[in-house]
Image (cartoon, helix red, strand yellow):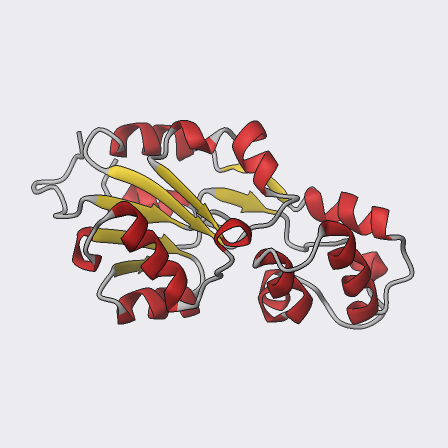
Amino acid sequence: MIKTKMKPDFDIILFDLGGVLIELSEHAIPTSWLKSKSFNSSDWFQSPTAMQFEKGQISAVEFANALIDELDLEVSSHQVITAFTAWPKGIFPQVPKILNTLKNDYKLAVLSNSNELHWPRILNEFKLSQYMDAMFSSHLIKLAKPDVLAFEHVLDSMTVSPEKVLFFDDNPLNISAAKKLGIESILVNNALEIESYFAL
């Protein structure tokens, strides 16, 4: 049970993945490939190619070739796919304890901007589905945060009102979007901050 004097009044806890439950490498691709600009997490979310990929609008090969053009890389599409697939390092060490504890009191769900390269690792390698009542990936629902339609899709699918959802994300734009719908939203930068929030 949650170690707080009063259990927070929510039915569902909704998590982002990268930077929240899953640790990412600092850069999506090796910096040695880049001629001038960086391509870290912030740059990723500003990339038109990235957003197309995470909405399931282009394949992995199309994504790799488009990223090569966008960043003027002198590498093969196979190299891009291999490096990008390895961007998620693994779940934060605290995650199993946190999720096992929380699922005693809440339904747990994921809303992640993800893609066909990372999603199989999330399901098969990181095994996060064992803790979750529902998992929503942008490339499968064809909607990506911070579009409020992505959050509305979750609310409709889980038949829950916004005020009964608590959302954790590391991107301020996603936090703002969720708050517009009345979802209680907390900005965090790692799983330790979630652990602290619930006093686990």
